[in-house]
Image (cartoon, rainbow, N blue to C red; front, side, top):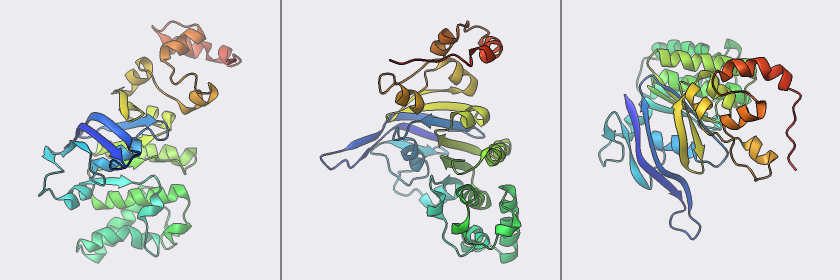
Length: 287
């Protein structure tokens, strides 16, 4: 299984006087069993990217391939694609609609003609897998918290038997403990040969659970590498830095951080650990 974006660009309102280029010549290969985290600021193109991967949006130029097939071919079965490549929206309530939680999870498999008892058993297993307790099964999905809605949307993908899980800003409605459980569950999916791609502002979550990290900036993937290398060697953008510097600085590098802390890059992990406590009181003054 693989997903490939080949020179994909996308322009919103292309036929108007105010076109907006959301993706600019994106090339990305997503392999089987990988856990990929893409980080970037609001409006950088992250959500637009994941919407291309299961055919919700068609690229203005370029092509998306799934298992070697061009998903834009005239005879390509998009319904089959979406049964294998599932997406949890940034606002998961947009994909919930049944009267109660249990019925919502069962909706898809029932419409595929599966046996009711089999569907109910698998629905129960999927809900327990993602951490939704029995007491919520017969509540309206719209009475759930944001984090629980996200879990419910994920349970629907698990039950559908997806091979690829796309998550847009996962964990934003969850507390730390819930996010830990989500991260471990997503890792377990990868261990089963599933593929996970998430887009997020949450640098800590991506660094902790992803095998590969990438950086989105203004429609470009400006860096992508294994997680450790990405954070040690590549320039990465933070919205917080941009706000603090009032637009004067758009990016910081690991080398900048090392220079500020007064440590050598070689063996920086140990140096950083030793100096962290002493440097906690340092302040950066921006005139």
